[in-house]
Amino acid sequence: MGQKLIIVVATAILLCTGILLGYVLSQLVLGFLALNLLTLLGTFSLILIFGTLYYVLFWELRRQQSRLSPQRTKLAVNRRIADNRLKNKLIAILNGDVAMAERLVEQVKQDYPDMPESWYWERVIADVEREQQSDRN
Image: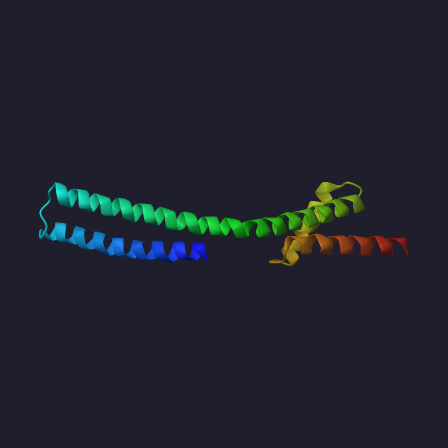
């Protein structure tokens, strides 16, 4: 709840500051405000506030996303471990022939595009095991 409140308040202040900054700059450009030290400092302070809130808001959003990413990272690591096990299993079935394993997977990728990486390795493993079993019979 605290982060959501920070985001809502920062967004509201950012919006108000942006409107004020736009108004002041338009008045300066149109010539309704004289360019003096006061308007220069006021405009600079609005730019500073706007930039700071923008940075804080997106920093907070990034921080929230990083809290969620350990779960995603864990899933990605588990997926990579599973993929590595499949690769090692295929290479072991092919008696250590890494090049052959990669060629077979590339061939299956061409035949069945847009499938998950682990699917290709599982498919080649199943095909090779089936072929080896039919050779024994």
